[in-house]
Image (cartoon, rainbow, N blue to C red):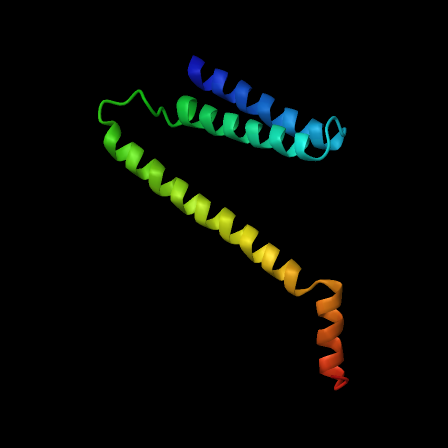
Length: 108
């Protein structure tokens, strides 16, 4: 029970730290992004150690295999989302949007 309480307190601390860093503008720019990424990695490690008990089981192979598979899915979703957002931003830049509207009106 003590490990769950410690994990909960650490998870709460990382979440509240990230929240207040953004809302109170303690950092900005790349410093904020790097700090949030490090807090996210810390939160991930806390979740693995205190709630999923990675490293304490007698047969770690299956849990580690499922963890790697979950990480692959997360990477696909995150990198795919970033790629889609970048691609849409590129295609819908003001100049591209103006060209598109002119083509729709028959101007070009």
